[in-house]
Amino acid sequence: MHPLKFSVPLALLASSGCAHLDVELATFMTPDHGTRSAKLPAGYIVENYVLAQGTQSIGVTHARHPHSGTVVLFCGGDTFHRSIEGGAVLEALTLDADVVLFDYPGYGDTTGKPGTETILDTATAVYDHIFSRDAAAGKRRVVYGFSLGGMVAAHLVQDRRADGLVLEATPTTVADWARSRIPLALKPVVKARIEPQLSGIDSVAALEQFPGKVLLLASRADEIVPARLSFEMERRLKQAHRDVRLIEFPERRHGAIVGSPAYAATLRNFFERVRALP
Image 1 (spheres, one colour):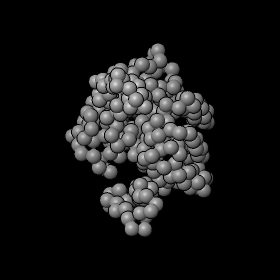
Image 2 (cartoon, helix red, strand yellow; image 1 turned 180 degrees about the vertical axis):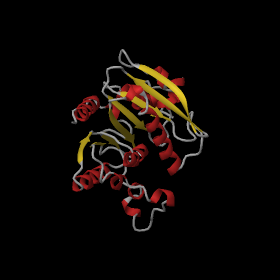
Image 3 (cartoon, one colour; image 1 turned 90 degrees about the vertical axis):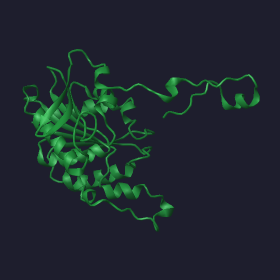
Image 4 (cartoon, one colour; image 1 turned 180 degrees about the horizontal axis):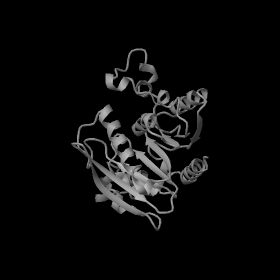
């Protein structure tokens, strides 16, 4: 729910008996921004379909351009739905690149129940499907993960080839993220209890042998995933001699980096670096 929008300053409300408070339907309900509403550059073709994978159905969107040189597989955050946020993601990432979106198990058009293994299996199935298509032949492969999706992306490229990896607001481990949510004053008395299937997830360990380029996006204003976790990831990946860069976006809250004026230029530069690989 969005905060109420006032038509006059609060001070005026207090001092005048004739002020107005505007309450509009848009205050409570905003339209979804699904893939079909996306406004993309000329030449893009957008396919929305359900991929049959054994007994599972997976909702997939593939936005492609005949002259692009890169395919970006996007792994969304924990609440990502193609039908709700998919259009915004397509508009942000169609920078001379094809973009692939998918729903996690139990979300949108994808069947099954969400879990560590089922989420990664779903991402792997989409990867294998997309890169078996003629439309992806000969194009560079980039996996992009946002928040929880960054951890999915990091583990995906352990087993599947990628030329580049983008991790936006991604925790190093679930344990690190959980500890970051505990206020400093309560750390001596509050301990994080991590579900066993989550305790072994380590984004950095998954990338210690990753041969491609890594781009980390972070903001000190992120209230969900502290920027210090991205700084720690950068430090550990450099220690492992990986090709990693971290770009910080000032005053951008969780999920708002995409709205920065520097975002598109940062991604274009990274895609160009990936396309320039021998």
